[in-house]
Length: 206
View 1 (cartoon, helix red, strand yellow):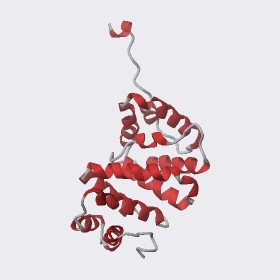
View 2 (cartoon, rainbow, N blue to C red; view 1 turned 135 degrees about the horizontal axis):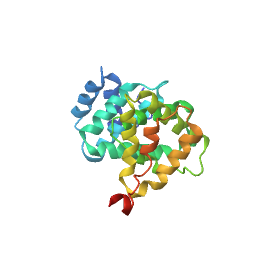
View 3 (cartoon, rainbow, N blue to C red; view 1 turned 60 degrees about the vertical axis):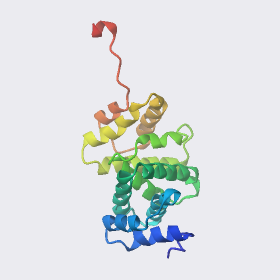
View 4 (tube, one colour; view 1 turned 120 degrees about the vertical axis):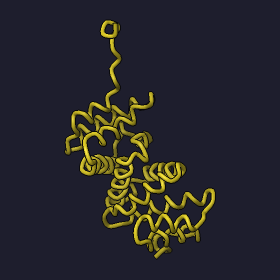
């Protein structure tokens, strides 16, 4: 089974076995830690998990919980996950709808737990949307709306991309996409959270 999933090194096969034989995500995490991987080998925790998640027939929250646990344990796993998504974005045209749906579900799960931010989408060409990108983003935002425990959590997810000056284009592009492609309505508070805070005038301030 490991070979069928392209687990072509001993490290990848060991991580794969830890994931697939675990009783739950905490058991998987403990099995991973017992592998005692060092340095660059540790990137395989997230890489193998990511590939396994995309191969499922439907999204399995087990991968979301395990991924969040790894990201909470060590910041380097967040970086690895980010690069997994950036690599996936480059080959979205070659992925089937099932893989795109699972990747969108996983990212929604991680965003709602603040392990990553929407800034991960900055590498996408949002001016020239292809069908796979539209499908991925529509599923991502619909899943976030459906899975968010409350409006405040959803609003905080969107507000995180307001923390940098370089996020102006991303904010406007996401607002445009949401207006055109997402049928599930975002609340006014969430839409407003994507808008930068207005600067008070001298008259109002003084």
